[in-house]
Every structure is written in C-alpha cells, then in structure tokens.
Image (cartoon, rainbow, N blue to C red; front, side):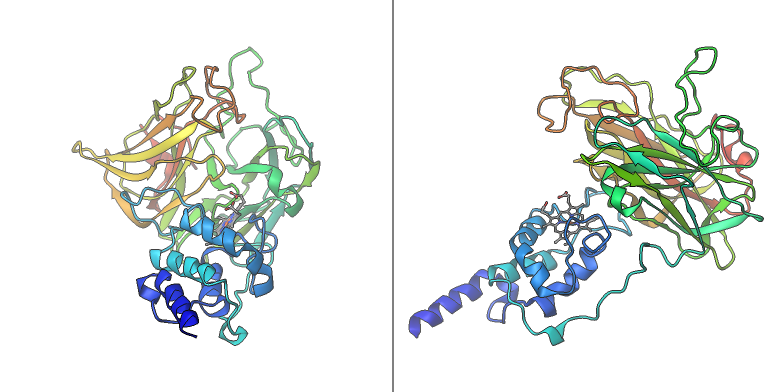
Length: 439
Ligand code: HEC
C-alpha cells in the first residue's frame, strides 16, 4: 500500500510542476483539442500527413510515443522561422504548455479518459482548405507521372472563361489525391489578356515543355512567367491563400491560368489532374495583393562550400506598399534564408529568418501585421547554400552548382507578397522599377 502510494507520487512529480498532484491529462479531454488545432490540418484523411490523428482514441494511441517525440523535438508541427525576427499570423510553433501536456499524457501511459469530455468534431470542407469555392477549374487532361526518373516542368494553359474582372479572396491549388506524393509544386500564373507568353506555342489544356532557347539560339527569359502575375503556389504542407475581407488578388476578364507543374516521381506511376478553387471577394476591395520576388539566377556555388551566400536582386519601391508575406525557395543545398527591409534612410531590419531551411517544407510566412514600406524601400533576400558533405541532402558535394529547375540544381527566389492600393494602376506602379509586369 505504502509502496504503491510512493510510486504514484513519483509519477506525479515527473509530470512537471504545472501538473503536480493533479490527475494526468487524458486523450479526450486534454490531448484531442491540441491535435485538432495543431495537427489535423495535415493529419486527416486526404491531406499530406501520413497518418490521421482523428477523434478516435484507438486510432491515435499507437502513435503516442511518436507524437511525443515529434512535438518535444519540434519536428512537428513543421515551422522554421527564427522566433527572434518577425511575428507571423500562421505561426505553427506550439506553446510550451501544450508540448508539456502531450509529453505528460504519454508519460502517464497515454490514458483514454472519458469520451464524453471530447471537444466537438472539427468539420472540414471536403477536398478544400479554403471555403466552398465559387469557381473550380481542373487540368483539362490528366498527366501520367512515371514511377521514376526526372520530369521536365510542364506548363498547362487553362482558359478561365471569365466575362468580367474578378477579385479573388481565397485560392487553393490541389493535386489529385493519388498524385499528391509526386507533386513537388504547382505555380499558378495568371496570363493577362494582353500577354503573348506561350501563346501560339502551348495549346490550351495540353501539357507543354517550352524549349530552353529561342529559335535563334538565345536562352529564353520568359520561363518564369514572362512578366505575368503569380496567383498562388502549392507546395506540400503549405497553407492556401486566404486574404482578409477588403484584400484580394485581381484577375482580368479574358485571362488564362498557366500552371507550372513540377512533378517528382515517387516510386509508382500515378495520374494527376490538379484543381484550382476560387472564392470571389464578396465586398468592396481596398487593397490589392501582388506577388514579387527577390531573385538571383547567376550564382555559382563552388564544390564543397559549406556556407555560400547568394543575394537576390532587389528594386526600390516607387510607391507605398505593405509587406504581407514571404515564401523562400531553394533546393536541396538550401541552408538558410533571410529577408531584410532596407529603407530609404539606410536603416535595415530583418523580417524573417529561416535558419535551418528544409527543402521538404516550402512554407509561406504571413506577417501578423503587414509592414508599411515607404517609397524607396527595398526587400533584400539573402540565401546561404551548403554544398559540403555535411549536408545530408546534398546530391553531390563535388559539383559546381548553378541555377536550374531540377532538385540537383539550385534556385534562389525569395517570393514576397505586397499589398497596394486597389485603385492603383499596376503598370504605373511598376514604371521605372526596371521590372516588367502587371495589368
Ligand atoms: C503542415 C502539415 C503537418 C502538420 C500541421 C503536422 N504534421 Fe506531422 N507530419 C506531416 C508530414 C507530411 C509527415 C511525414 C513526413 C515527415 O515525417 O516529415 C508527418 C509526420 C509526422 C509523424 C511521423 C513521425 C515523425 O516524426 O516523422 C508524427 C508522429 C507527426 N507527424 C506528428 C504530428 C503532430 C503531433 C502534429 C501536431 C502537433 C503534427 N504532426 C502536425 C505533416 C504535418
């Protein structure tokens, strides 16, 4: 009796100060709400998490130890921003108290508790992470991804058939469920009615691989969108674009979508037919969202370099804008990425630092409060690449690495979204920036 009591007491002590002498957490009462809030976004049927942490003890119990390990080491939920810089609306980092709660639950033997204590089930819209879409388009033809090898980027033009200009408040691109593991990214461009990009070359609906050079042998400079706007980017584990009411992206009547599909064979032949869902803005729009980047396509990473820095080109803004979100993009040698705002008065501020870049997690970092940029301000991107044998993902430390689409080549793109006055003419806005774009 005495010994049992002693052992019980010891168990209480290891639970940590906050929980000492209280009953251990149970699945239904204490743990399920955390799984709903922080894990089910990915760990449910049809999403990217390899197992579903649904509202059923029997299904989750076998994973208890793995869950504990993943949250204590902060591998899960995936989030890579250095907390020293910037505050993010979509910050996935879990509060310490919740990590401790999960650990205490597992340490106490992962008790089930009473099903009647369970929070209400979360409901999800079938197939989407945005609200029920007002408009959905699908790749007109399926694309077969082979089991192995490399697949060139496929460009697919999808006519939109919009009779009037539209403001988009939410947009989500989704691969077909069976092809999910083989879709590395979907970059969705809006081809404006006046743009000739791929026109006459890529037949609508038919996957197309643009030749790398022009007929007279020069490298093409229009592979990255030919000055057309990016609407959204799908990567596994990222959040879809959802702007607050009053903020939206614009699509002109007569525009087409152009999907840039990066397929990465996953060991089994699968068929993709990705879809894009749109929710139109329901009220007046005051701020227009546009996607820019700080980019460098001319770098050369020497063999064995452990920390090779590459800076993106930046351009000074002509008019006021608000910085809204970031999306750093590198490949397997990406080590860290930083965005800095340099203001006209020379001051500099780091707004996002990703100290341990992970190629498998291409994430958007949405600022909690948009940051005002006055004319003359620039957004700088600083990328560091690790081409040494210390990088476990490095395909070949002896290679000199340059820009290229495939994962054993590299990229340095710091996408960022700006909000501008919705009434502003975008061509006017770009004038003198040295950049093309917009309509
Ligand atoms: C953004 C999507 C996403 C979220 C949110 C997420 N996971 Fe995951 N999780 C994944 C994916 C994808 C994998 C498989 C690939 C991998 O292991 O990196 C995974 C793997 C795991 C694994 C397998 C073992 C391991 O550590 O690799 C565990 C356990 C896990 N997640 C637990 C959690 C828990 C617990 C939460 C919430 C606190 C969570 N995940 C939130 C996407 C997510």
